[in-house]
Image 1: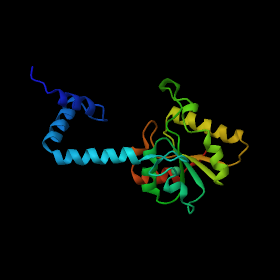
Image 2: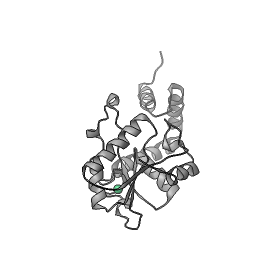
Image 3: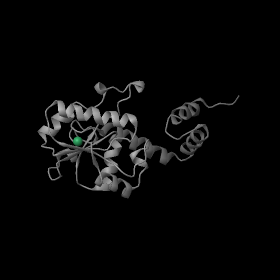
Length: 198
Ligand SMILES: [Zn+2]
């Protein structure tokens, strides 16, 4: 049987991408081989991104330096918005503009998926509230059982430190079980504005 092993290898790598199945992997592989300039452009962009984009040491969002631009910005409202993924920060920043600070948890508590409080960025939240003089915490975690569990865990952590602070969570408009990234801008703004106290 006629097989080109390098091509097979490329296909098995591409198939690991989200929403890419057998057929699309093959199509992309053929495309890259016959459009070598585009292939080079992707290789360079990917290499540079992997080399230069890291997680901010303070908020754990994407950053090109140890501490990201948002954490360094002193002109924002002292509200800390807690989200699950680094990409949520990019999304909310696009919708809200230069408004709040963020904290990325890196996941929600789910022992079945090996996500325990110990391997998430939760413990540094109370510390940040004190150091950065935060006046409100807004939980924008996924509206799932795991998201709720994580929210209550964070609330407990904050209370254990004796910190008295308003803790709210995004409310209306985000259907249960869905991802922040599937919401349109206005739905997100409504959910963030009409937040409810936890
Ligand atoms: Zn940061």
